[in-house]
Length: 471
Image (cartoon, rainbow, N blue to C red):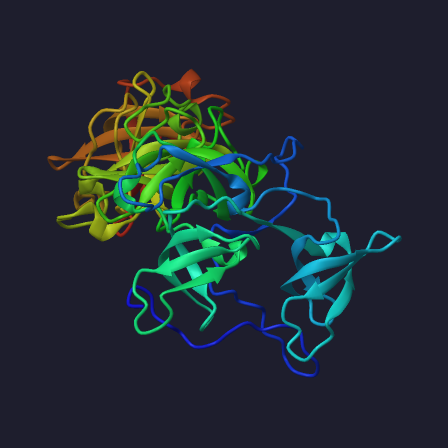
């Protein structure tokens, strides 16, 4: 069989006296043999069994994405257990999870599990319900369907086609490339899965049932049965703002999702909000929490999406999140030929807020060091000023300046010296002697003021100014 390699090794099971190795069925990660967990959403509603769109390679002439297969083949939520149930249970000997079958239900609520492969250890153990996961096995394969199945000759998985449904519940699988071995074999349904959905068969807007594999601060990776996992960005989980992703989703949770976008490198995104594809837009985000941030301050962000002209980064400040654009010219000093060569979706970055346009709901960000500048109305990005001419300005010298922008913590003032112009920050404590409750009560944009240079940081591109006298 030439399609898949034949790695050595078989099943492992509980055994005495040695370090245990967890059972690794030859089809780990397959959709036909998943442990179903009892999960709940943050609202407390139990997860329901759904249906997955199966777009896997099948018999000749069969369409992709049109047929539906019960999500049982991908693991369903079920907290009850009965005799004969196939489970994955934690063995009390080593706290490792192994496959087995419930052989007895005890009166005290525990269960006797008979292990698939004891491997020299006890054949059974008493296990509590909270240490068990029911395995839901899909059994509705049809003749002519393309599958991947475990060959009983060597316990490895290969491509084949279901040729017959046997009376004992097994399926006769005819191998695509026997490679000198058996032409076909009877295979139990638990050892069969559908092939992964080819990337080129995924369609933006198509609905799938998925299972969340991992959760990070910026989003989650979702298994929909494709060749790779899809990225569910935090902004695509709900129509409402999600402040903490861990309050909304969790590992193992089953969700309904839609393909939100595809990339040339074989990666794709998913959304839990129907219609919220990468080409669609939400209503303007509330940028109020970002309006008065200093362009000198750095904030953590996560790359949400890459475009030829830059990257959209999700920034979170004091619990508020919004997306802003890091233009290709603001990714780093020097020329950037390809955005994808510098950053990738899901990458954590540090950014500065350069400007916020409340009317259009746009925010400009920069990953470059230096003074951010930028007008309060969210105009074009301003390159870092040359502060060299201000280095030697005596701190007792008064300069005439004009207020460029007001923030809650102070005002940015444009000053001139020797023909050079640059912006500096007058902190709220440096506007006047005494307490200043509101910067806007003291200053207004465009106002002409007298300032002194307190300090110049050439490395950071920052200049501190004061309106207070030396005394």
